[in-house]
Image (tube, rainbow, N blue to C red; front, side):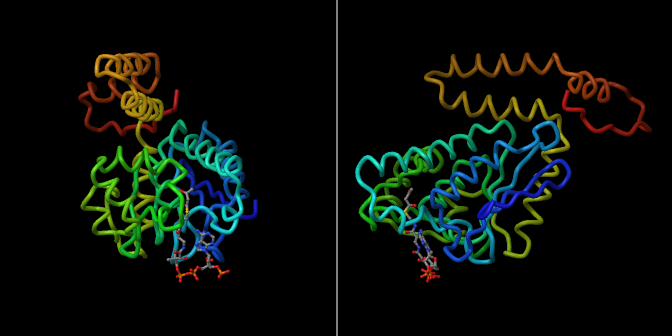
Length: 262
Ligand code: CAA
């Protein structure tokens, strides 16, 4: 792949969008490669993903403005669908995805970060949906996910004004979970990924599914049924049996074994 790098590090893996000359902007090829790299993740081994951008300056500076500049109405809609399909794949990917936002996260960059489960960023990160300044709406899910993450009032303000916000403000409004000095960001993301990876993998996957599908349900009654089923599923796993037996065994000398993903 030309623009997307994949590195497995034991039980977690790092996906890096690497089109540094264009500040990692998302053209069709980058979207295709992202789609393909997700298909290649070895889900028997890998339990958490980290998504980041190459270089010290930018996570992703948006969808490719050059490519979009000549699109027709139908092509614009198709380009939106292409991005949305990949971002939805990321959002519903079976294992958690941490966005390590290392600089510009504008337009499609903010949108791809919002498709991840967890966002952490560097002090030089800059978030925003600048689309109305270009004559378009956010097109890769920004109108929907920003409103869900920070509330409709704040999302509308950010989108209508096209104002970019720095890391501290993104933290204050709940768009990111934590801010780190740039040189500490990847270490923090990897520590978090390793911490997630050591927990019972099927339980973690079921938590992701329960939260995502529950939030999309029409009522709390439906949402809670989704949780009940996924909770019940865990009782068919070896990891549940082992995790609870370990807790109940009062032998303090015993060392907890890694979960088996079974
Ligand atoms: N698309 C295409 N190319 C981009 C790009 C983008 N979104 N963002 C940056 N680049 C390119 C620049 O054109 C430039 O290329 P050249 O060297 O060939 O001229 C290179 O990356 C470096 O960029 P700058 O020289 O502009 O760097 P800077 O440090 O002066 O500015 C910046 C950085 C503030 C991020 C600025 O590049 C910028 O404003 N980029 C556009 C941000 C934006 O509007 N993103 C939203 C796009 S719309 C969208 O994403 C729609 C959607 O929802 C699907």
